[in-house]
Length: 289
Image (cartoon, rainbow, N blue to C red; front, top):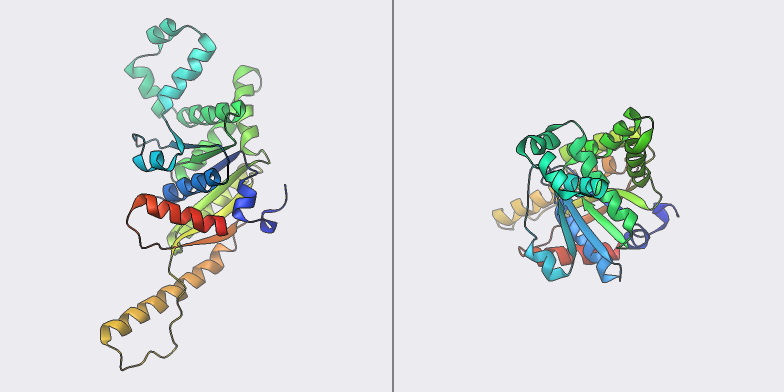
């Protein structure tokens, strides 16, 4: 595949089979994931959107239904049961042995098991190829790092055999040339620092293909005169000064963002309070980039 810098977001995304998205909590990661799926869907890609959070469970958002996006919320215990039944092929045996609160609790708390089970489900969907692109909305960067790290640890732990091969399949998907990892952040210091730390740790794990760094909710680039007329109302002068301060601060943070090995893209703040309209605006903005 060509280097990212030579392609637009849409041009590159249309060639991908898996796009992972993560970012610090509260930066609008899920909205960007939905918009990514919508932009691809608008361009005749068959898209499946996957969400996983170890702390939350959601019913299907009506917004996604109205946008026509296929969505799945993954849950570790359910994915483990599905995988076990494919292997055991005997549901009564599974129910007798595995369907209990102790095992469910074990799946949730055992180090790396929950993440590996979820990653295994993503690989299964990837391997089936029933969609053109999987858009995977991962949790915040700390848990996202565990998601990538856990199968790699299991592959090393089991040097040979079935578990080694299964973990190896997941790891191969992670670094496949048609897999990409995108990060969503705000044009602010703390989210950018956390994003940089995530990138550093991720690249220490393997040869991942980093994609786009989305700076979400950027201040509209409306220039403010160097000298604000003193004849203006005080509230207007304060508003203009605050706007200029935000632009200057974001410009400095943009310099830091460009030090990361990702292609930096900006998403402006949109005035709409309706979720569907905001997603559509972000998707349209992405298609222009």
